[in-house]
Figure (tube, rainbow, N blue to C red):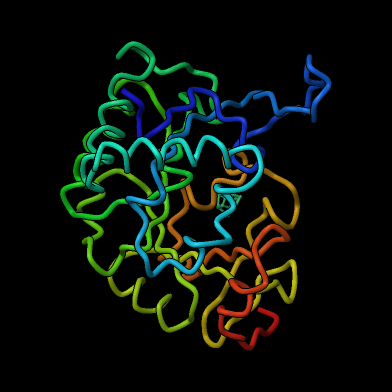
Length: 263
Ligand code: SF4
């Protein structure tokens, strides 16, 4: 059976954890090879699990381009061919996390000990039940010595924050208004902007935004750890992401123009 999810024991996404670009044996483009500290990750079928309201779903989702584009398309095809619901996909994602590393101890080669786990780099969760399944899998991951489990969701309006358990989950938003609404529901906001006005903390209206250091300084998530371990609600900041070249002009135009000021 083709699977609608992928589990990567050691992520080769240079935003998540360090990678080295190595020459391919077949003379094609260089490929990323994971380097310590390591991080694990999952990918889920975007077509089935992400809401239609996501501005990036149809075009502009970075997971559907570059090194992950082919794999992401295969996950979509598998989910669609088997007529899976979003919950079907999430249940399989949770089962794979529980089965990772032969259900044994998680390797202790992460940035703070056990490997951290980034949930569905591509994909989302559609229901409270789905968030609970992943919360159970995340708790199991940590019982086996794993590190922080973190992710982002567009479904912060539908799913109560408590359903995510020990998962560090940020709300994906595109406006200051939604950032405030997400925070009121217990979610730290991650806001996508057309561009950063500064590489230092800046304001979008009354919202303080820290531009993602992976985008401004080339660090990685497991080294930065703002989304992993910090209490962004208590810090009263949002994490900012900027659109990049591979995102289309149409997506860029669909984002509101926000007045940004130095922090
Ligand atoms: S703010 Fe830090 S942890 Fe969050 S996405 Fe950017 S690099 Fe990763």
